[in-house]
Image 1 (cartoon, rainbow, N blue to C red):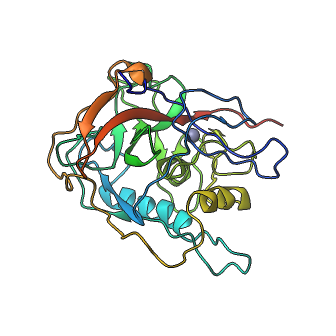
Image 2 (image 1 turned 135 degrees about the vertical axis):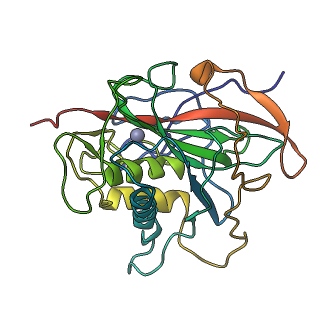
Length: 298
Ligand SMILES: [Zn+2]
């Protein structure tokens, strides 16, 4: 059996003496401490020139409207889309994440069905290995362990619920102000979309990909370290040799039908499948590391 075991690793990256602080996620299940990148496995990335995300239609907390979520998600992916990847700052990385139609499909990837890369509010947490206490959000990626190609990525937000999730978080949708009792939704989504595109955590404590954020903290603007990470995955746009396909493999799922990949957490059994191009593929589910609440160090 040559299928790789499931991993929720992240990150790999450059040499030890590099100036950059970013890390890329890899196919490895190894974990690295802050300041280190996982050096094993293949780096993850999307292979198309673009992909799409879908907002999950239900379960919004009372403080978040669909219109606000839509605006903030667009602003969050927009920050990454503007990253310049050449020295004069005019050439952008070639990859784009575009809004697709909203969906009723939950997180997960169906090898033989329609799919959606979802953004959803989860009103239960700490019920399995993926959803760790203290995390504000996670990104779950499904990828090909032999190539590092990402097939699916789903963002889940740890949502306060009086009945089911009292340790969850409230989210602020303010365009300008941080709410000291809430996590800034744009800060969280900008970070999670970094995972979505293949980045792991940075040890630069100003970076969007720094793994911690405090309540009320605004961290929406990418640093040069975040930009360098994105450009390492998706270099400057040149002659395109792949197409932009924002619809997931199998077609865009707007109805329910996703498999929830989280049973057993990151140790869930891998599965083999027929990929969209007919090749036998082994897939992994992987967690993007969670953003945690933590007081900033003085
Ligand atoms: Zn993270």
